[in-house]
Length: 139
Length: 124
Image 1 (tube, rainbow over the protein chains, first blue to last red):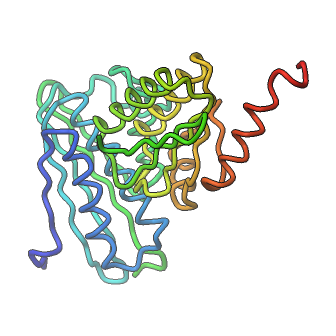
Image 2: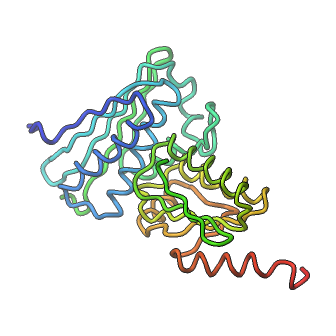
């Protein structure tokens, strides 16, 4: 069951939307038992995946949702675009690799900041990144 | 201008007040380099205390500021990286290689004094 206030969708069409997405993520996560360090890790990871949308697909959206399961709670971040997709996902997840002139640390870095990280790419149809962070001690 | 830049003697102090977009970050870079040249600054302090995150773009931009300013004869010090931001930077795999850092504004000014006033005297 999801209450309306526990889910936010941020459309990513400008640089400012990257800031909005990470701030919304921090705000939403702060109602759970995350430390301020964890909140910064979450905001940073959101910033990276949102930037990836701007860099490779220009537009997309970031969906933020709190999840409460028996024994644990956390935040789920889904970043979606309908861009060209990533040709070689394994390569894209390597530190320092970039096809877009960036540092190449965005996606692999975001994976290290979160607990769960999954990336799906369909060539010509877009990329979906799903990542989760759970509160310490299982909520 | 998203980030106010103050002149203090031979130094410029850029005090980030809020979260910055990528565009703001590039604007800061351009403003700082332009003013450092115009005012013949010897040192630059970028105070990032209020920055919400230091992601790959932000750290790359700050590194670029330091390197470009260095080529123009000004030394740069980043001050005020918060503990949780430092933690996230390490996890993310970012470093500010080649960029001087100091705990806060006061330490940054002391550091710049040492860095800029020493040169020439010691002969090294």
